[in-house]
Amino acid sequence: MNAAFRLAASRLASLTAGSAAYIALISAIYNETGSALWVSAALFFGVVGSVVGAPAAGWVGDRFERRRVMVGSDLAAAVVAAAMALTVDSALALTLLFGLLAVVESPFEPSSASAMPTLVPPAKLPRANALVAATSSASYLVGPLLGGLLLGVGASASELLAVDAVSFVVSAALVVSIRRPFGLSGGTESEPGVWAGVRLIVDEPVLRVLVTATVVSLLGMGIVNVANYPLSIQLGGGTEGYGALEALLGGGGLVGAAIASRILNVGRAPLVITVMYAVSGAGLLLAGLAPVLAVALAGMAIAGAGRGLGDVADTTLVQARTDDARRSRVFAAQDGAAHAAYSGAMLAGGLIVSAAGARAGVLTAGACGLVAALVASRMLSATRSRSGSRPGRARRTP
Image (cartoon, rainbow, N blue to C red; front, side):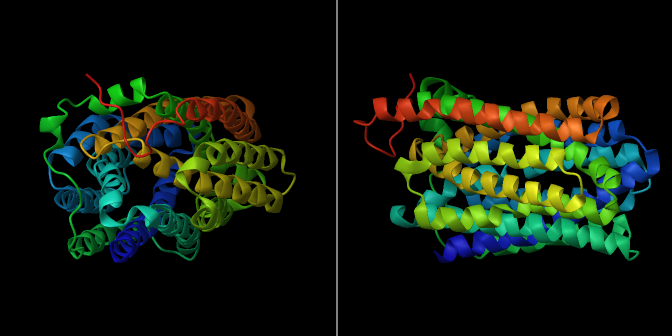
């Protein structure tokens, strides 16, 4: 588990600083333009960057040694974050660089998730996934709160972005310190093609349903991320309230990850994912109906906890149903599909909030969570129909 602890520490460093910088970025753009559509455009470029980068991200993770891929991604992200710190007064520059940051960051997560089954024993894999998810959730909890508070006491967006750049260097150093194999390299020779992960998802019923449910859920998450800032303003929370809403939506996953480390195994993963999408949707509905900020914060915490446990189960299920030669490409394909939906939701979120208000946006997001749960429930019958197959072995595509 030492390798998992170091990966978790690398995520804690870069995601905490990145989450604080995200609050600074959105606040700077909104304060300069006064427009939810500009915020939506910035988020849209960020997600489009992830979609554009996904095919290559998965391919390099299966083709090259994953440690080097992760370090290279971190160092490239440090350069882009530094450039953002120098152009903080331009909404256009921040928007474009935010998209580029997403592109260069995109190889890290697929490579990290794909390496985990090699870095830890199979029996400890759910715990290792939960550990990384818990530190990520802690980052999403502390980072936005810290960002909102620092901005509130006079820190500049440029300073927070500069710290973000340094955090990527720290993350790279932690990855370098792991002295264990990161899995197969050269997997693109035995399983060629950028789209090998997509083909496996299409052919594997459980993965196909899982990715579809993820896409539906991310439609809601994209909308709520646009709606949270104006919702906080409407409820009298200001920048600090926005930071708290974002923190609890991301950081609520700490509870979910803690539960996952105790109850999760591959066999339970489909049921856990289904229930947790429903819990997340219910939390967002509560936030959308909230009469005061405290109730909205409670709803975001519930939604975050549901997503936290569901995300650990999602990762564990994908790892179990893919082979090492294609695993990075499967994770990247899932990320690409989710981010494609998220990018559309960015634009839709701006339109919904502008036309009907922040509450309508959050309520729409909650409805997406409930629909995602209905879609995910199809995995229960799919896994029962394949109960005779060996776990952890993916069917090879032609």
